[in-house]
Image (cartoon, rainbow, N blue to C red; front, side, top):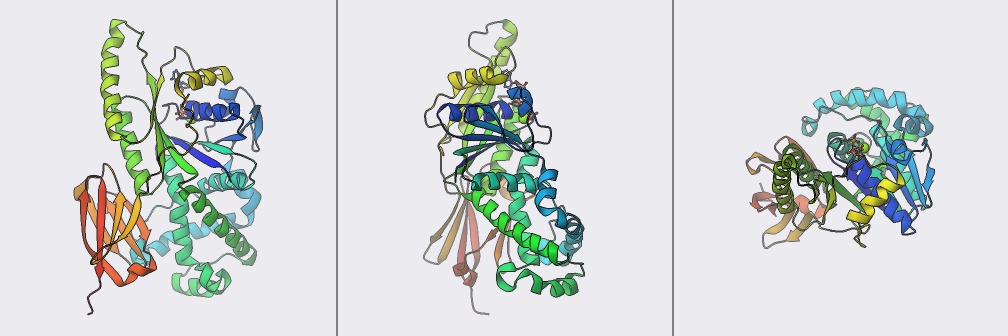
Length: 395
Ligand SMILES: Nc1ncnc2c1ncn2[C@@H]1O[C@H](COP(=O)(O)OP(=O)(O)OP(=O)(O)O)[C@@H](O)[C@H]1O
Ligand SMILES: [Mg+2]
């Protein structure tokens, strides 16, 4: 299975242009490449000046493009469960309020988003591509897209502990326990298939050796702030960010007075970005005097800014979640940059550790060995949160 690169960033910063430049570079190097857009407002077809559809279309030798239609994907495979599931997802909100540890999750993200990701996983599984480049919708949506499989699996595990008893056996229990109407048998089978897809999908997204996320930004105050936040959340969810692309930099040769002030502002934000992303490769892309369109436009970006011969590799593999043995028990180190440190809250359930930073939240399933320990203390060490586990005192 191939390499996956996911491009994210604020609206209009150049995600599609940068993602497509990567894809073109890969194809030129002889790698069989697919560029996929998950944004409902697709614009790959404008960029490549070619009509695109629900299945991949060649836009350059070795390069195919696809604009995913999540509704079509959902109907195609899971038509039977659509209604049943939508009803169930709605009911799950009631379930959430009945389960103590789910109290905080009141908003369930769009079910459709999941099917874009499943399609990408399927394309990857075919083995037909060396590289899949994913061009995402603007930041907010990307985040819910990426954390969705985790969140969804979590629901699934609580509601249908498949591995243990089998989904069908669970039906009467869930009806009785949660007062929700379960889907019929055909739909239940589809749910089982979906469940397997989901676990494959999570595996794909979590594989730090092959899947990475790249941030596209511009040197402007608001965008830098958003990029920072985005990065913190991606770390909290343990994704591998391995590149930052600063786009729309006013070129040196522009000397008009009007732009002098802007160049100073940009320089300041570029410096800030370089501080934030120390240790992660940073690429700079100039502001062109016209839109980036067609193969020709992309070629320019590749030639001028993306020459790095290692560009398509996983550039920085940093493990963000490290369990270590200590004298008293274990420690868990998490890399969470830019978190407001005073807003930290740790809650242990029987199986998970729930970490809340501000209004963000992450469930870390605890390894079995840690179940006999409890959280003792936690401390910040720069951008690392270290949580110490101590042996449970006998009550
Ligand atoms: N460095 C640049 N110089 C000149 N034009 C650029 C540059 N980068 C992007 N553009 C142009 O800006 C517009 C927006 O870029 P692009 O579509 O890549 O952004 P995006 O982040 O994908 O936007 P959206 O959030 O709407 O999907 C496009 O018309 C593109 O050609
Ligand atoms: Mg775009």
